[in-house]
Image 1 (cartoon, one colour):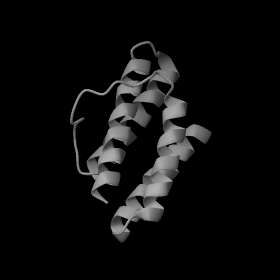
Image 2 (cartoon, helix red, strand yellow):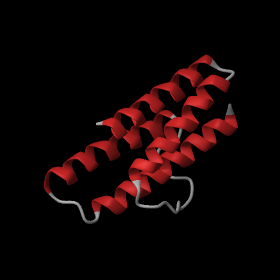
Image 3 (cartoon, one colour):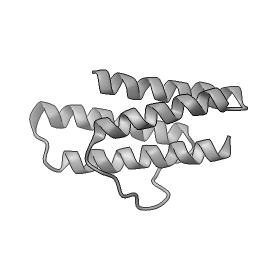
Image 4 (cartoon, one colour):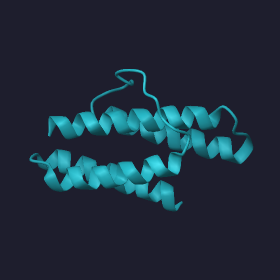
Length: 103
């Protein structure tokens, strides 16, 4: 599961970078929504065992595309996980990402 955990951490770091870029120009209700969503991704990263990005991450500005890609990767990691706690964590974060895309 260590490879899947590392991949999940990298995905959350990329999302945080994308949210930071989007927040640079966001105002009002959009900024508030992005700030709340960004906080959830920081919590995801902490749950995955890292409180900060392990290295600078280059990420595009399309948060929706990153969320969809991450959700798919996390669903697959949940199915393949050896440790049940990891499987549950991956599935939970994937569901959160799906909700953000649909919300």
